[in-house]
Image 1 (cartoon, rainbow, N blue to C red):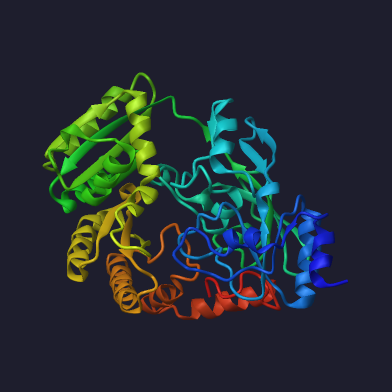
Image 2 (cartoon, rainbow, N blue to C red; image 1 turned 45 degrees about the vertical axis):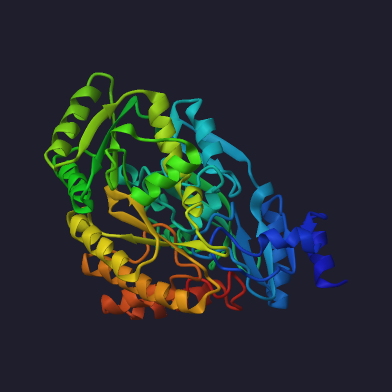
Length: 464
């Protein structure tokens, strides 16, 4: 029996091998082209995943686990001699406990689907990446995804209580548990969060959940100055208010939304930047908190500012922000162009200076760039429109990304906020460790990888 036949038997025939079936799995949402996988396997339970890894470990076949395929750094891009584990059939919500405030789910559950189920009982799972309509729990854990609600709730690592993981040799382990407190040796659960499938395959996750806010209101403001938009967020947080979301978009972003979603902002006055601040509170206190936020924002010199209570208008703006990456692709003016997304983070106190430096940096290189991001937690995205097959353009993109990373580090931040490392940021990860005089960290990560994956078959070539 050949290897493909063995793998086919392991998943009871749920395998893709035809060329037209394999092509969509070559790459993810990033600009990396990737290679055609040997096969795509669709396991239905942990025993099938275990059997697959036993076979691949024996044969030295690279294994790439894939959720929604929404990675922007090439984390799920296929390299040579690889099979893809598509986790789409492992999409069950196993159990929800509102009393103990956890949900146990399989890795293929989409985040929006989980939150729909939780909303029926007045709860939510806070991590909220822009791609939540497609992004899965397993993929978001593997990249430690953040999202729009990160300013209040943090990133995925804050919300994972425990995991079931299959190691490279097929061994199944359980980490963490269902309780909020635990002091039982090394935190292996945290080690798998953000590991991008290089240490093991997540087959079950126990997640913290929290009650939905009673009410949410929104303040939107328009600015001619990027640094003032950045200063507004820092001032709000310093005042003691913690927004549930705080987002910003530049003119390129706003124009793309207008063209592709038909959503225009009549009160923008042709401003260059939009700030969105959401406040969650009780019925009794929401107005007071919104008026406080409004007053603080007015003090930063916006061109216009107003409070929004209408749920439909709030939802339309949120959907446009979540769909922004797709909208920006329409800004391409040449065939073959893609969006290379920078993803840095700085402390809110240095945000204003960092944004000014980034604006000047964009002007220096002359690319069409859309600036937007989760400004409330200092997370800035710079979407660079380029042709990845143009070597000279990509050299300039690489130089721009290096400088973007340096701006983050100089301002006390990091080269990667929520998109992971994948293929794209391996160089930037080393740069960050060198800047912090902690290059030994890379050696430690490499050693950890070797302990969990001796033959190096799990997402080979990514992250490290």
